[in-house]
Length: 574
Image (tube, rainbow, N blue to C red):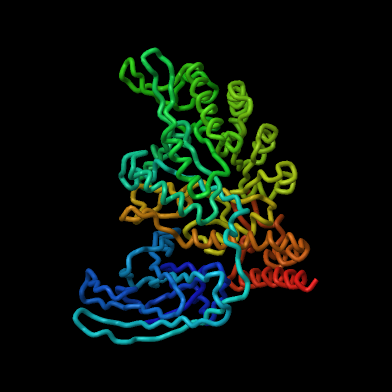
């Protein structure tokens, strides 16, 4: 049995012919932060692995069980990492499991992710982490197979309690998908229990915005009605029920919206309210539209008519005006209107005039509407920029325009990754350090943070297979977390590395406040290639760019911390 101790950023796969991973003998950790690494076990055979003393018999009783015992004076959490099929029929490890026994086939490593929380008052110095691997068969005494240890060096440096505070993370949520995947009633008690869990895990990574679906099916299911490579139901439904009373008066029920906002606010996520479904809605081919809707954009708004006892769709301008006025009034009464944005997702060149006209019509109803728009085309960006309050640009558009945008929209810019660029990205097959580098890039681009279009846009069989529309969406683009089988939401290695990247962002910002030139020099050495050469076109990256290694990251972090420490010591002396 091979036992490898490797960096937390290693991504195991069934491509075992790849370069053998760097092995660790020492890990550097910082107080008020978590240290982490992985254990990889493999002997080319199918085995069951266990993380505790619980008796667990494998389905195939003839295979052995290997128990992994970890001994240290520090608290820790150990989790198996499960695989999903990815690009080129290679499976990649990403999902962090809760189960304490798991079977892995011989074509892959058995990865174990170990995380050690280091308190702010922990004494700095060296701590030993020892591993013992025991093998057993049913009704046989365990045999000690191997032992290993790794040294954890805890630095004097102390991270702040909330290093993600300055980073504006906008991971779009898919609340209808959440209910559908767990097969619970939409907006019911069980659904809100899941929403609470989602809000909590988002708060722990630095989420700042709430996704509010204020009009039906803004993305029309991301083409799931015509794309049938893998089963998926991806429609997102409004959280604002509408009815007409016996007199024909239109009335809105904001109780679901209020509870949703309160759920996120409970975890400190209330800096931005992002409305979807009222501007820049998608109009994909062959999808039926409400042609009678008296508005430039054919929005979808359902209501229950109490006089006819039927569900119908808003068509008349007066009804739409009444809906929008009630929504705006309610958000003002809640005290959140000033941080509310009407969002649009990648308007197209042929939609520029329609977008402008639709926005004018909205502002004729409420002049103080603000917009936040994701742009993937430079021509559309420059055409619509005069009417946009908060531009979010694709990686390519950001490379070309970030200096102009950050000057024009201080405190109101983000960039995003989606089904492109080819790198650096957060796909299942992307090296994990490409996920982590997003924090560095957010700083480099002088943006306020990162937007990602999908936290949980899961296809039907997401517990075992996250592939959907693979011709357009690289596998893993549609989610950053996974659904469990027990009502829990499961984190991923990508989630963990994004959190690391946001810590890097804090280090860069903290050092910049003391010595901007030092940060500039450190970053130039880290990124190596000039930003003008990162992209070959709007989708394809320069393959020589972002050839990132754990060693480079260790050097980046140690350089920044050394700079901060020197500044702090110098201030103390003065």
